[in-house]
Length: 160
Figure 1 (cartoon, rainbow, N blue to C red):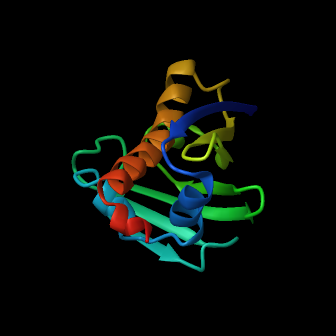
Figure 2 (figure 1 turned 45 degrees about the horizontal axis):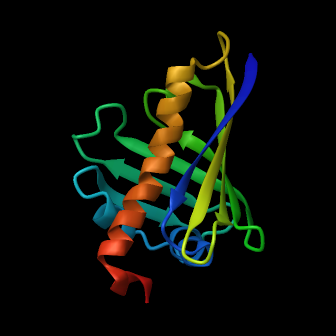
């Protein structure tokens, strides 16, 4: 068993407190299917968003690598804008891993922007996860954040 980790980040044209509130605190299960129309069919949330909350995303046929992505919140630090989750069920890359934990951190980057940093920690039989699979996994998470950003910029009424 090999333990590994990797990180990536993306800049979002939205204040950190707004993105944190909408995407991580007052999570609306209808937001992702709207923001990711054509890719995410539905989102089910069991819990209040805090530790123990289980989120299940069901993908459309357009997503070939996965049909369902299920996570459980392990810890949330609202003051630091950090959430840690463990993957319970995932796609093609996640299926290569014995365990997968993600940490998402939202940091201010000026008044009207923020940076979302992701760190993925994993355990895997058979050596480290190849760099191309690491990139694919990180981009899967970060592309969801960018889709939410694009949707909220186009639909500012959702920010109210």
